[in-house]
Image (cartoon, rainbow, N blue to C red; front, side, top):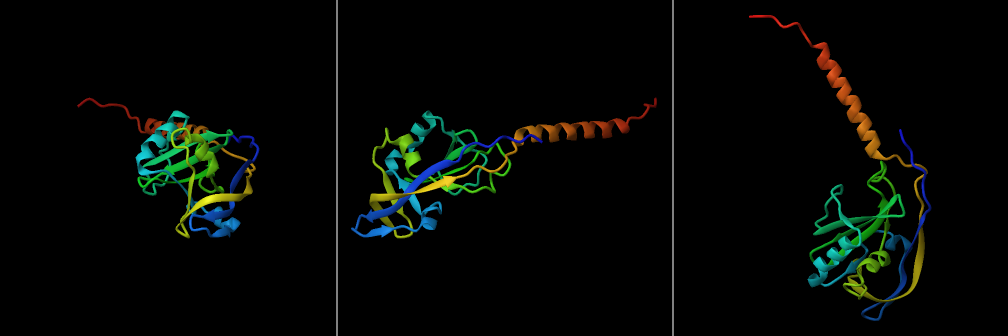
Length: 191
């Protein structure tokens, strides 16, 4: 089995102290901001396709290995070698995004993810230069961010790429099947 040396952690900033469109001021709980879907990016519906196209033009790819949640686009981009930034864009203009271990490795589904707000915006701000963040629990728009939490996403202690393992497994299976079939060879008889 091949193990990959892990890389450095990623530092992510997420809103901590905010003001909403109704003037309410709040300090968000750190556990709240860490739950994907609580703070959501938004672009007007007329920009959904343009934002997706911009992300694709900067290196994002459609992902096939994922669990659909009703999104119109599910895009990923490699980030610092072992990480991926995964963005789901919905027809209504809302977006959910998170950092995760790359789909190239086993353990991707079991390892911690970290939501992303600012990093995704950096990729599409040339197409739509306004940062809209929605608190889905309060159903309010954040109009000002006063402070941010700083979170560290540490890499796993080791990673195993699944492709070499898949090739080894497929090769072993093929040899076993061929070996089995060869044991079934018999002398042909004339009728």
